[in-house]
Length: 332
Image (cartoon, rainbow, N blue to C red; front, side, top):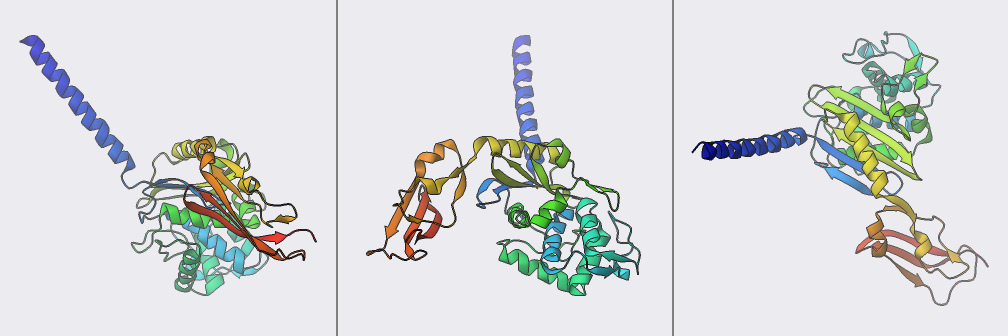
């Protein structure tokens, strides 16, 4: 009888333990969102709740920086407006009436996460926060960020303000193709102002070169990281992730281990003297190589003038079209 009771208790403990582990796992993933994207091709390498709208705290400033870099010059003088002085949260301690350059404010925005810098830049750009937010949403839509809405330039809590891991990954991949943006977010120390970058990934992960941390009580811990290894640059987004640095490292390691960049335009049997102007590289797993195929269409008769269109090349991964470009006469 005693053995039966012990067996029952052990079974109950195992069941309870199983339920506890399951609940813990569910709790760990509840509300968390992840997305990893290859910057060059925009191929999505990993997702978890990637299309769930969530608050994203200071990672908002990635889009703010993009707009400023595209529309303003580094040496423009910015008179700090009253609205920017004393903004709550992280700050570079701007005072109304001071004169700063766009360059200094951008470094304050991305290295020190200055909410006051965000407001100053937004008003300098668009004269008001509301107009700047409208510009943010227009730009996000152009970049394919279909499930986002921005109402401020810094990401401080607002129930109307949200994005998704996928949208933020696409915005960040676009941003990392801007050389000046890359320079700013990869800077560990900005000497003119004595500012250190808050992003620990720059020092802790091999190949990390950006981008932005974020935290509010509503958004939880958020991190957008860019890293480059073996000719492949990826952006990793984690939202509402308590162990954001550890999880980001896991996702980056997984991406660089499972995928490698392949120059797949080389597999097409293109006749001599004909070619494409943009060679195409794409991240693939080893098991996907056999699923790559190409379709070559050539005009008859072929034109003989250099630079003339000679046909079209399409490349497929299984049944998905991943590349389509005109073929050109490369030699007379």
